[in-house]
Image 1 (cartoon, rainbow, N blue to C red):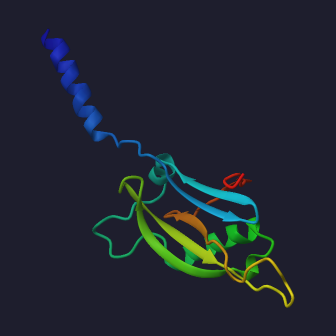
Image 2 (cartoon, helix red, strand yellow; image 1 turned 90 degrees about the horizontal axis):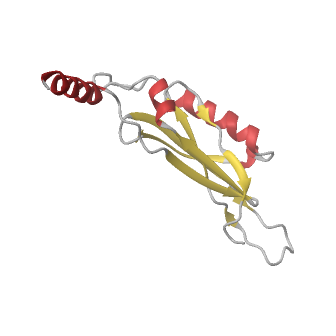
Image 3 (cartoon, rainbow, N blue to C red; image 1 turned 180 degrees about the vertical axis):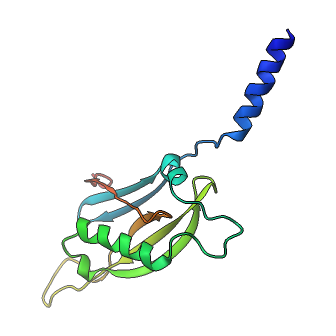
Length: 148
C-alpha cells in the first residue's frame, strides 16, 4: 500500500513539472474567395526561444519578424506589393506560455473610373504570426465557404 501511495505521489509531482499543452491560437484572414488560417500549436511555441521576464527585449527583434511575415505575404499573394503594414504586436500565446509577433497588413481597393457595383475601401486585413525563432507560420489556404 505504501508503495502505491509513493508511486502516486511521484507521478503527481512529475505531472506538475511538465508544461501543459495549450489550445492552439488561430488567426483568420479572407481575401479573393480564400480563407487563410494561421494555427499556432503548443509544440511550435515550446520549440521557439523563450522571452524570459528577466530580459528587457524579446529574443527576436520586431524588424526580423516583419521581414519573415513580409516574405510569407509575398509567397501567398501575387499583389503583395499593394499591401501595407498595419500593425505589429507582441502577444502572449498558448495560454501565456510563450510569445509571438502578430503582424497585420492591409490593402486598399480603388475602383477604376466607371466601375459599377463594387466598392472602394480597405480590404479585410491579412494577419500573420511569427515565433521568437523567426519562423513565420504559413497559413493554410482553403476556399472560403462562409457565404455559401
